[in-house]
Image 1 (tube, one colour):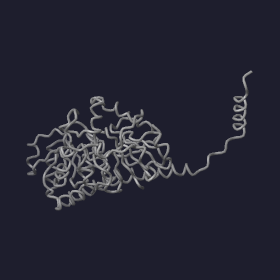
Image 2 (spheres, rainbow, N blue to C red):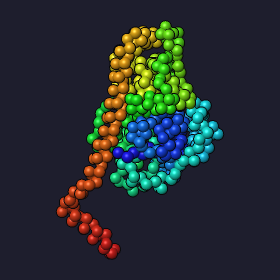
Image 3 (cartoon, rainbow, N blue to C red):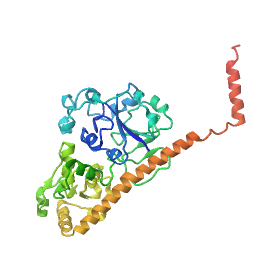
Image 4 (cartoon, one colour):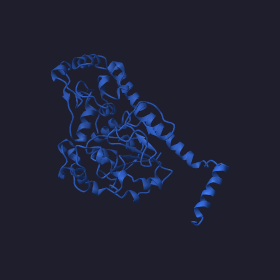
Length: 368
């Protein structure tokens, strides 16, 4: 499948880069998250930024972020992040704060979408009228906020991608499982190995950013504690070097950071009640407290074979839940759509044809 990932020039997340910049350069340009970088590392997908079209469906994003005024987000069209009035912009990737969407954005109507089998649109980046002109393409939208427009596909699109990864495989277009962080089990490890040109250190405990962990509780392990970095490249370098990734306490999370950690080569320890992607965690990696995490880490440090086995299991689950099932769903949906296009329409019953003729005859009669 030839895939394109598309975002608007007003989208406050992910990449600010030209098409075909390469997986590393594209990923490091992200405003905030890693996102579906596996589309580039695994599938050689294209990446396009399109200008916001003046149609209703391409403006549904205005209601998805009520805490940010649309006028503030529209500054991203032609101003770098650092020059905008966006709230909390100091939380974003400083390496991307000087990049402008305008340097790479094109009009959606000018793109040859027929070159693609599947288009994955972040929110609704491509107008419905353009979608309708390319019926052989499987059109998918991936909401930036997971709760929006997921009851059924809207706006003339074929597929709504729901940010879930439950392992089910769809047979036809509709609402499909597809994670926001679409990554293979070694995507980030391989990318950072090439970027840093050295093997990973594999020491330390990376504490998930939304956790509530007393550092003293993990001190007995002897591992240094690592924490989130704003710069995407630096954050991935830390994940690449760490040995354990711990989520404990704090608010519940979807689990995108867990996928990143496993893809970078870190073993994840977390309570399954606090992550949506708990299916990635074998029972031996469940923890209930920082003290519990410390006990598991000490035990696994004494048993490298057990550590390797559990990491292999987590990687196998990333491959199965995050990559294989979503891709099979897209393949099935594409096949089903094209099969329906190739099938002749069912014959119209005689009674219905006669009724149509009668309606046309009556409508063409002059008024009495």
